[in-house]
Amino acid sequence: MSVEDKTEFIMAIRNYKCTKTERYSDCTDVTASNASNEKILLRSIEPQGKAGFVGIDEVKNMIKVMRHENYNSGILISKRFTTAAVQEMRQENIQQVSDEYMPPFDTENLYLAIANCVNEQCKVKCGKIPLSKSDCKGHLKGSFCRVRALSDNSAFHFEHGWIILMKNDLKQLLSLSKSIQ
Image (cartoon, rainbow, N blue to C red; front, side, top):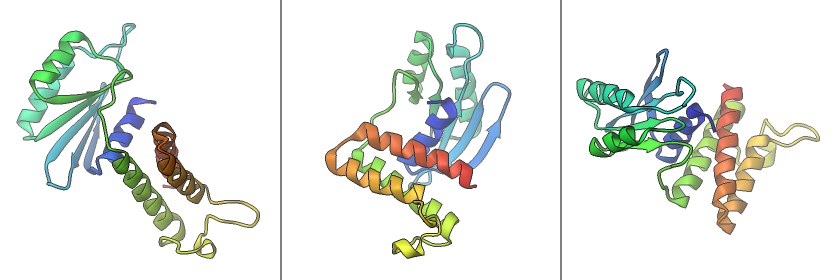
């Protein structure tokens, strides 16, 4: 999963609302808010160089931004981090998301994130949330609506407790939302 996809996944799972996105040469900052109206910085960094690690300097830069812009919390997303960077993040209560570590989440939150994503895509595609198959404009002659199919799949996966498949359902829905917009 790309760093950008991880950012979208975290935002969907935690039901964060994006208020601003800024792209820089070395990173992307997403300012988000949660239900408590806390200001959260999600910084995603594609590591540069052969080693592919994010180091302590990048963490310190993020801390400066968080203090200057009055963020309540932060999440740093990349592929890999140095040991010093991880220690600094722990001291400053910055969450890390990497190839090796994804913060824990409730299965119910994952299912709700899928439902919210389905509803938003149905509103865009059909103008409303379809109540029946005939209301669905994504359901054309002889074909099926991919959003509806993923919704049905995720319900089945939730009933059976197949979290890995639910994560995959959400990834696919987030990918579809990019193509719909």
